[in-house]
Image 1 (cartoon, rainbow over the protein chains, first blue to last red):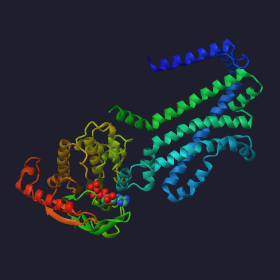
Image 2: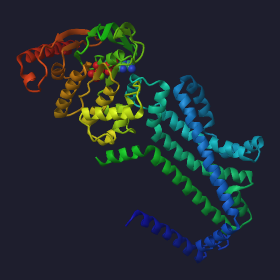
Image 3: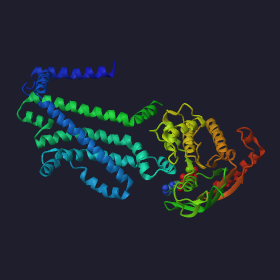
Image 4: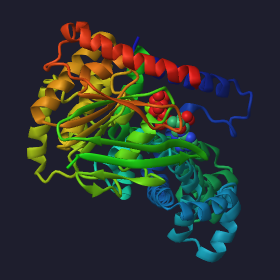
Length: 256
Length: 254
Ligand SMILES: Nc1ncnc2c1ncn2[C@@H]1O[C@H](COP(=O)(O)OP(=O)(O)OP(=O)(O)O)[C@@H](O)[C@H]1O
Ligand SMILES: [Mg+2]
């Protein structure tokens, strides 16, 4: 049996149990709709368009925010890897700021940045920056010494070595951070939208929840799930493109 | 003028004196083997000769010019080939990685890389990644990459310590053939006294730390060398005994 089919069966089973439990009436049906009810609501909502707009806004925010954070974090790590002084100056600041939960700084960020794109840019970049930076800083310093000495002996400059040896050697580890950032991005975008309360899936969910439109809340969850799957698929595609060699090398080593 | 002229260099690492006033010269086209007790500082010496480390005192001159960094015209081959090759690059791209200082178009570089790969016996493996081929083949890729830089001096740090006996003999003969054909000067660090004698015109024996030259032995065996005949020659066996005695004496005093 293919793994595809197995996953499909398992998901179908999940929905069947959900349908059964909901119809049993253990929880009042107003609060716990059946999958068929949710599906019907979802179709209605998609026709009305509001949920689609909210979905697209959130997905775009997560993707743009995560991409900006990755670019910024890798650039910062390249600089701190190149200049030891910069690293020693930056690392204590990193230790201080890193543990701050993004949701905790949202109210203050709204005060300074308003409710527009600047707010989301700040929250998302702040939330996604750390896992990428920490992985990248570690990875860029971990390239084997023989690779670096070989490159030096061939006449590569320290910048060349950063770009052509340390960065490619570190990419598999950097991608660990990118995957974390991608999942954090969606969480942070939805949390910020809930607090900011203007648009996006976070607002949609909050609004539906507070006005007790339960099937709509479930429909919002389904859309959030789809957004998560899309983000994950994009990261996996990039991973295969950028460090496919690493997975194949590991698979070969595992097979021996 | 000597290709390499090392004049009384010293080097300490982490407070310990590793190299203690070491001098040696290599003439154009010579094949020199360096043997010495393990941990005596052979790799440290090679990194100093390659301009990767600066000696604390003394001087290294390459082709008459004092070193201040890795010079054009030298290439290094490490023991640890599986780590010195870049696993995200195919074999051919690992070879062109050595051509940083070569002025040529990308196409010309690839053509030359293909020729060099064929010369080291890797025709048909250019599209493979290093981790897809055997250890001996990986070391051949590392040799090809070093040759790609068109070095006049090759520094080899125990390049064959990790491969099986048959592969070692094959690559020894390949190195001798390439060095002779291309007129390269070679400096080979090895643990293996038999390998040192088989390959070299001169064998330099190093002391324990702080290391310096204990003996400099001319190996006047005919070339081309032959894995069976050379190793059976009486002159070879005498030299072998001499070097082994030197090393044993150092073991007991260490
Ligand atoms: N960066 C360093 N700091 C301090 N000590 C070092 C450093 N690098 C090497 N050493 C020490 O210097 C000595 C010589 O090291 P080196 O690798 O040059 O010896 P070697 O002769 O090549 O050894 P081997 O026979 O194992 O290849 C060793 O005792 C090692 O522990
Ligand atoms: Mg060594």
